[in-house]
Image 1 (cartoon, rainbow, N blue to C red):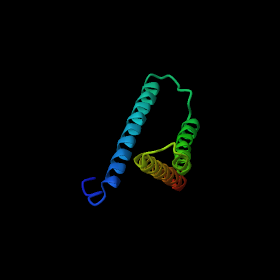
Image 2 (image 1 turned 90 degrees about the vertical axis):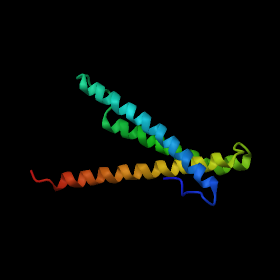
Image 3 (image 1 turned 60 degrees about the horizontal axis):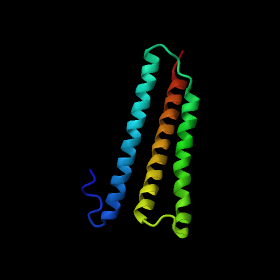
Image 4 (image 1 turned 45 degrees about the vertical axis):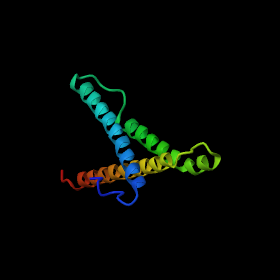
Length: 120
């Protein structure tokens, strides 16, 4: 999929590959969390975290990614970040995270609308 990306600029390709690796790592942690939820519900024990707290935790994580990306220009100027690759990777990671969150929001809204259309 990424073979055609960055044929003229390998920096873009490396940034996208790094973002994909980071997203794959997050995907693995989400799968582990889903497995633990399934284990909890499968054994009949009630998990203390409810849907609202899970959503709040997710939104906090997204906000953290965005805040980190917004702080990058200041870090470049002050010299805290010396490698531009780190900046590109973090910006792409924040962008992908935000787009993922928007897609989840859209799916939740679609599900809500579908439920409201159901006849009782």
